[in-house]
Image 1 (spheres, rainbow, N blue to C red):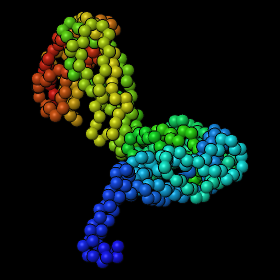
Image 2: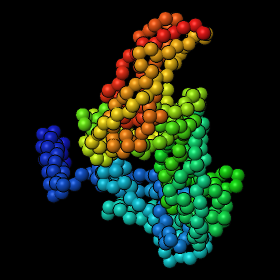
Image 3: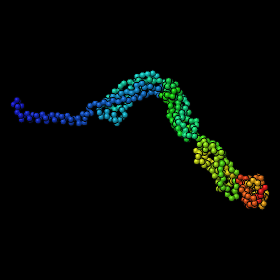
Length: 408
């Protein structure tokens, strides 16, 4: 044997055989476990902080969590830990304490968890959650509105309208008793029209500091009217035509008699009456006609209320009536002058209109006159003008007369 070992060739052969055997052992061992990844057999650790959710009867109790956060240590394979860290399996699980068996008092309650996959070692520090449980108290309070800022120049805000008007406050006895106001804050800076907003509600103590309580509901709808200076004035309209031939207006009942003008103070104060729209009766049929027209808004005004004019116009068949010996008045004579009609002192006139109107008219209701303004002494042929009752028209009358003007 010693001789063989001293022979170099024998040693080389033995070395080769040993190497082959060692290779076979290693490779045969791997084939018996082809799915094993050596990396997966090592552990990894993931540490983070989280909140613990208390589960309790929220209708009866208020819970104050005295242990604010806990540390979680997860141990497991790098593959699973990596997926947990990246949120691919779930968002790091959930931790909670079940307080449903507990009554009023302060307790250290064991922390439980859910949502973790198998194969994870979970350690929580601390293992318990310190909580204080108190009975829930409720009261009802009205909502106050605080307006922040100032409306646009010339505008003013009205009384806020809040919906709902009251809310429920819930919390511990001390918290509820500390609440002095429930307020809604709303910005009215540069407002020039009604504000309607859904705003959050705040519970405050006497010094204006927030109090941590439940408010139900948590928001309220607040309406704040915003108005400009205004003035109420009579409303008028302008008739631009006449009824069809053979028809006449018997009456016009103006339903909208006044309007409210909104605008700068100096502007609205200038109005004593407001001119509404033009009214056409040319196409109105017999009988009662209800007319509604948009009221034009002057450029210097913000708005007008109401924004429409309402009229009831009654159209009837017309008739004609003659009036004799209507005197002609002389108007506009200069100082130191006098005049007279030399062609005819009186005139005859025929009017057309609704029977009810014409039947009530007398000569005194009709005025005939000539305008002699700036005319010198001498004879002049001048036009005769007529003032006749509303809704009637002149269809036959003397158009011109001769007038003599002399010095007194």
